[in-house]
Amino acid sequence: MRTHQKMALLVAATALVGGTAAVAAPAAVAASDACYTQSTIGLTCHYYYGQAWAEYGSTGNHVAEIQGLINGTTDYRYSSGGSRLTVDGIFGSATERAVRWFQREHMKAGSVDGIVGPNTWKALRGYRT
Picture (cartoon, one colour):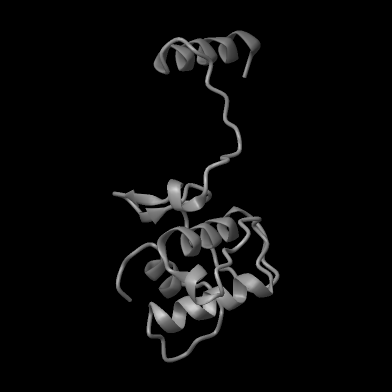
């Protein structure tokens, strides 16, 4: 894309947001304040909109979305001694524990595996499995 095309897009975007330049910045808002229902996908915290497979060792925005959804849409912190998941996009032992808890408590899953596949995503997004 040429420089003048980029500038035209910036000017158009600036006009759409009331004359001030909008710059995307990392959200400093707690996940519980940022998660809500979006008509096309269900619950979201706006880190990721898809349903990529996630398990221990996974990293990325899809993991941050899982962490945000567990923090922002469940009572996990009360059952985990008051702690929330760190939304860092790293699927470590704390995230695996939280996913297992979610599967057991919210999905009533017969097989709790700590892996976020299609059924767990569906439940995280607020749909019955």
